[in-house]
Amino acid sequence: MGRLEIEQLADRLLPVLRKKPGAFTDYDSLAQKLKADKPSVQEAIETLASWDYKLKKRGEAVAFIEAPDVLTATEIAYGLKTKSIARNIFAYKAVKSTNDLAAEMAEGGQPEGTIVVADQQTKGRGRLGRRWYSPEGTGIYLSIVLKPEFPTEMAPAVSVLTAVALADTLVKYNPDDVRIKWPNDVLIGGRKVAGILTELAAEREKINHIIIGVGINVNQAAGDFPEEIRHLATSVRRSVKKKVRRVDLLQSFLANFEKEYAGYKRSGLKKSHAKIRKYSSLIGHEITIRSGRHEETGRAVDIDVDGRLVLERDGVKSLINAGEVTVAKR
Ligand code: BTN
Image (cartoon, rainbow, N blue to C red; front, side, top):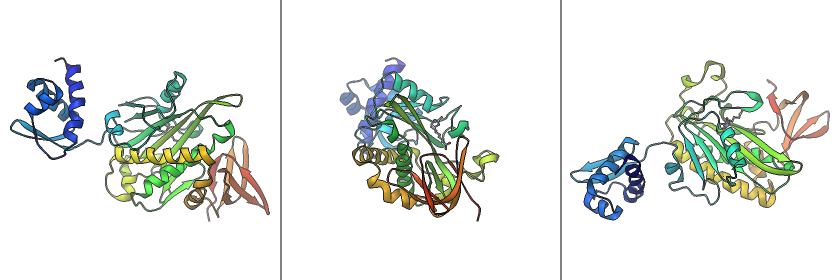
């Protein structure tokens, strides 16, 4: 068998071994089951080991012990509990930006729910033209392709519901204090742990696609962050004091996202409204909000049922759709 065929055999062998973790299966029965010869099975086992799957060998038998924490399509798909989101997965070692690639794929006809994931980004983009620090092996860099039927006015709130899905995912790890800094930053203990970059492609009133870009700091240690963001950024690991499996966190986020997005399509933000308020880091604070050249200052008093920030100044309330918020020091 050639290299490619061995790798394909390894792909077929993996779910067989994985079904019974810790249990030994002998090479002969594997060969029979996979309709391959024994030396090829042995090579396929070596291939799995070279992909960092932890296996135990005993004579002519092998057992599955543990999967590596890698963001490959195989690992992301394994045990994933979604119906439509991430049923089509593109996973890479390194890309410039998953958002750019996802936009190309959306234009090329890839369906709603397609995801693009990378282990590293060389030109990760943040909002307002900023850079998103995207080192290999520690973070999650994900873009989701959406092709909704709803009107463009409904697009901005997708960021908010993504933030809710992220917060719901992160609280399960019991970190200090998970908050959403409206509209789309997720904070742990006051520092940014995840950011969302939503990009919309629309013509007149019709949405062609929305790309939801999500960057999550998962396993960075404090000193890993570049000097200039060290005081602003955190990671899940830093908060819970242990490494976290990225693939588990990603799967759980995808399931939460699917739920939030389906709910939004059905009935807007109604179902998530209580959570949006609960997680908000801004309600009750004096803030300044900037959008392009426009700037407003006031007290953030609420987030309405359409995901807009309610700002109060001199007893007058205004509704804000989007912008960059700075919280006044107290
Ligand atoms: C921000 O807070 O400024 C948004 C950060 C968004 C980063 C993610 S990482 C995956 C996707 N690809 C990108 O280039 N950016 C987003």
